[in-house]
Length: 608
Image (cartoon, rainbow, N blue to C red; front, side, top):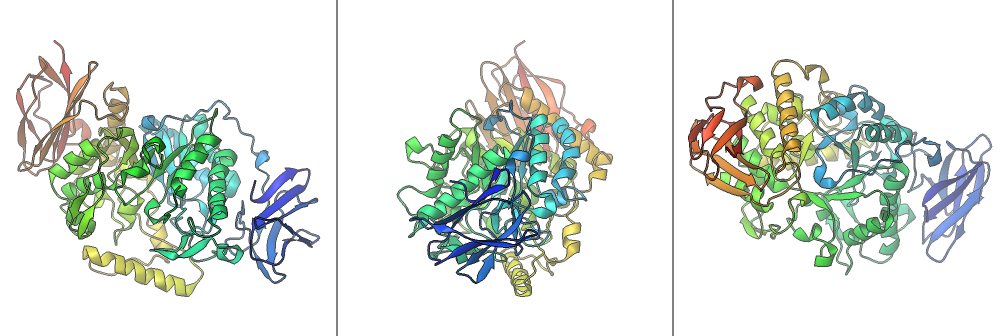
């Protein structure tokens, strides 16, 4: 079953909408000759009609009970915004040429998160395309787009979307997204999309007028919870499962990043996330694989455990514990959720076991939190030093480049890219972008504008940030968040970009590091010196990673078990605009060497 306006060709279109409690439903066509056509109800609450003379681009609304007129809850396109009429889209018009594209294995991905609206001055899908070759040259092979489902106004992070099937008109609409995906696949780049299934935004959210899409049983921080386990939830689930299929079949996307699955409240015997995993497996059988990556605050490994082990079967999740451990070491911050972190041992635990909080007491939460994921493959975890949340949910939207030294930026890059997990970069970090990434909106409801301003100020109290937060509704807040691409090759920005490129090359060409893997990983943690040594190896290669998070030089041993070691990389070298390296090119077994402050060193064992 296809929801919304399913264009059948030759001007024919089938309209389908779920509205089980309405006494009548009509589709009002807004072409040159306006028509109002009745729809028929089936025994599951779906209304349908098939109509001739409806060319692509036709505008329409649904008329409920002969009175209220609303856009389609499964609209493909909202050219006039969330409150305007929907438009018919002919998805067969896109001349796809990616039939040979088979997607990347998730473990091979180097992810790059970007916000379409601030990635360029134009803020469109089309404007991303000219930058793709530069990203590929860096070593990126997978884009992770922040949500593009239609949201109110022209400026938004996308998590206030209210039309899950429609592509944001101000970004370029359905055609723009398809052209971007096509251009990515031509270059060997996968495309992931961030989707929000835990809530809808408040402005333009008309789903509840059609049916029981929401429940009062649970609450989310952002609005009513979606009805995934109450009465009539089968059809609510079907709506979101149709959305998954929509992105895979119509837009040729390669995977989804599922926002805040901890706010998908579901106590059913077969949770929605498990059903989604099953549906994706059935949908892709014999075809291109489709990856599901979760964001979860639960530290509950069942989200990513295989269904055969009573898990939900999602392939991977973002790993906040890694970020928090790394960020607190680099910045010294200890407020808010950073109160739970601060030791080198926390980062060591995340590197070896993924979750730091595995039923350990959390001072921030005032309770124990999480369970163990130590037995799960490293390919189940995506790590980062920055992302949209960790930057944009700071009061001033500061990137790491505004919080730490240049040497620490390189240290952070090495910790992420040379980790045993799937690395993710946030747009601009590769050249030390200094513009903030702030939270911005363009709501039309002034009461909502005030509520957002107040809510943001309340969120910042836990971090004791002082001053007045930037106004999310201001156009200047948005404009100040746009990337400054012209700086990419200038001075230290260019040096940092070259360093990122080298890290990705080293990872990709290393037998040990090329794919996520914790086998053979051993660590030495020196809390007093703020130093962490990581040994990785197999029969093909042995390496030693040495990280100094301290402000003073630190002497460490090259380790034993190999006749000698070669220095492959030192972030302190002048080649990377560092203060200079005193580490020789060759070191004997157990030979001591000195790590510069805030530096990362990579050694490779030599057999002779």
